[in-house]
Length: 218
Image (cartoon, rainbow, N blue to C red; front, side):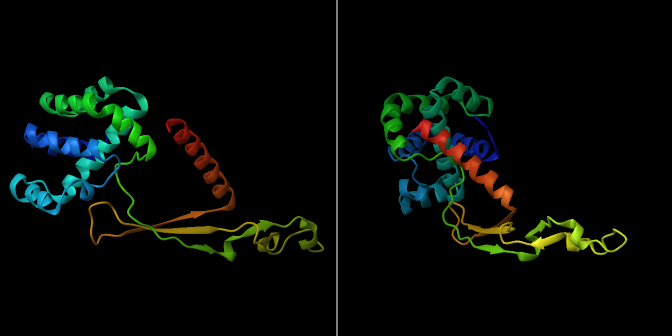
């Protein structure tokens, strides 16, 4: 299981909670597989986390996302002991690990069945996105087949640009995504990815491989 800063922060924040509070948080995650923190806690409960326990809304969201990710690994790999070792190595207290273990013993089988009906294996939740495709003709050039047609009487090519033609079969395509991270109300991240035709083909082939792996988990 890969550990990143989000999981390490979630462990640190969970450690700051009392054992009874930890049982509530982990229990809610088990009760509704793959749900966002706003679906697990009421507005009043979220405010109590902020005002009484110094756990911000974003930190609570990160705890839910991170331990949903952890549980997905346990479901997929059936490696609870190994996951517990990783959590311990990254600072999770023995008492909090014991809460996690007991919740798994009590709810693990039911959770496994329900999560397979709604598989989610992410720490950052994509809230929404938009996309558009633009074909840039200037970059859609293919080599000319009959190079001899562009040579002068001396057998030289005067303009190298003549060796290429614009061809709609070789588009340069740009995808623009707008993402809204879980727990953020107004923050929107925008990024673009540019592909040539061969890169698009490689991307879809890789996505098919990923889908085959996910199908095996389900």
